[in-house]
Structure formats: C-alpha cells, structure tokens
Length: 323
Image 1 (spheres, rainbow, N blue to C red):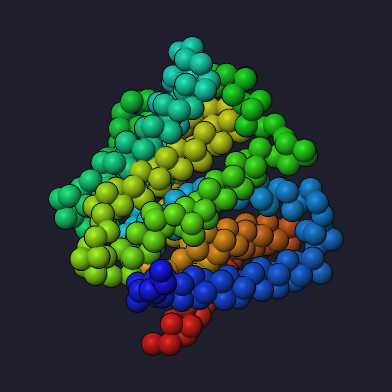
Image 2: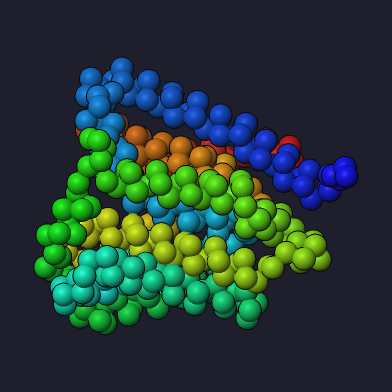
C-alpha cells in the first residue's frame, strides 16, 4: 500500500529543513565569535576555558531547552527562574533532613513539574494567556520560596550530592554531560516522536491541529511540565556548585533562556525552533560573555552586545521567513 503524504507532514518536513538551514547560519555566527576572541585573547581558545564556557552555560542551556519547547508550541514561560528557586530551597531542605539523595533529586524535579502543571493547566484548560499566567507564576513561586525560607539561604547541602554535581565523566564536567543527555532526549522527542509533531503543529496553527485530532490541551500541559522540570534540574546543578540554596536564585533566567532560543532560530510566534539551534544560541551567549570578560570589558557593554545579537537574530529570522 502506498503511503500518501499529507500537507501537514509536508509542512513539518519543510519546517525541519528550515531549522537545519537556520542552525547552519547560527553555527557560522558562533564560529565568527570564537575566531574573533581567539585572536583578541590567547586564553580564550584553550581547552580549560572552552570547558568553562560550556559548564557556565549549562544552567542557561537547561532552562533554554525547556523554553524552546514552550515557544515552539506558541507559549512562553516567564516563571522558570522562580520555579528553580522554589525547587532549590525545597530540594535542599529534603536533603538536609536526611532524605536519600536520589529520592531528593526526584522530588525536586517533581516540584518543578508541579509548577509546570499549575501553569500549563491554567493555559490549556482555563484558556488564559501564557504571558499572564507565567507572569503570575513568577511572583507566586518566588513569594512561596521567600516565605518558606524567611528570605535566608538554606545551607548544609550534603557532600555526596555536591560531589556528584562537581564530578567529571572522562574529564568532562558533569553539568555538561547532563545537558548533552537532555539535549539528545529532547532532540529525539522533537524529531522522532508524535509529541514533537504535536508541538510543532500546535505552534503552527492550533485550530488546524485540533481539527486534525492533535491532543492540544494535553500537549500544552506537557511542554510546561518539561520546562518546569528542567528549571528544577538547573537549580540542582547550581546548589550543587554553591553548596547552598537561595530563594533569590533564578533572577532573569527566563530572559537569558528566551534570548538563547531566539538566537537559535525559535520564533516567538510559535511553530518554529530547534534543540540544536538553541544549544548554539546558549553557547554564543556564554562565549560572548566569557570573551568580553577576558578582555576586561565592563558588564554594561556585555549587556549591550547581548541585546544587539538578539535584535540581529530577530532581523535574520524575519528575513528568512520572507515577510
């Protein structure tokens, strides 16, 4: 029996081709940044510094990967920073109370997932706007974290957990390994599973996706659950490195994540984006900040450079869409 190619399948295949072309352009931009800073600073293009860039970018990478799925689906998640803060203080409390580290890690990820269920359910089932819901979550989750801790850091993270986060695998820091595994899983989801097609379809045309039988509401909740869980995972990496959990962590993480996704080719209108592109966007931001720091450029100018790159990325996206 011959398989008929549907317009929906053709559109998804075409969009994935565009992702690959866009990824190539983003990768060229990264290479230009690396070559430029390699000439300006002899320290930049060394293995320890490159690993440092990747390790320092690991937190933004996890947040941005979750944000990418949300953006592709046509949504936005402004609550990832406070979700990370709430997960951090509650997870740290469990570890300090003697809960086995593996169970505490799962519970921490569960807290982030619950935050995602809260936001995703209001968006999918109550029909509220993602911007408003997650803006409310930004204040709500941060307030709970502050109230729970009284605004004070939670100290006493177990050494066993800290040793795990700060360990290496074949010389590669564990945060980089974690990001690589998560990225591979999400790439597989987006390119090899029905869920990936559902996310693309909803972001491209929600009503058409609903008519085609896509479980729109369940898919929307799923992407926010993934985003919340990855925010919690980023929080675990941070508290493992710091040895303490602060209720104020995660400030402006959502902006860095959105920036990385946008630089990587994700469209804030939905229906467009890629895991690989977002990773390159994360590394571009990390390399840019690292290079400017090595050159003793003030942080004000680092913000300026980041803003200009985001705007340029949006102009390129506009041009490649041809409208």
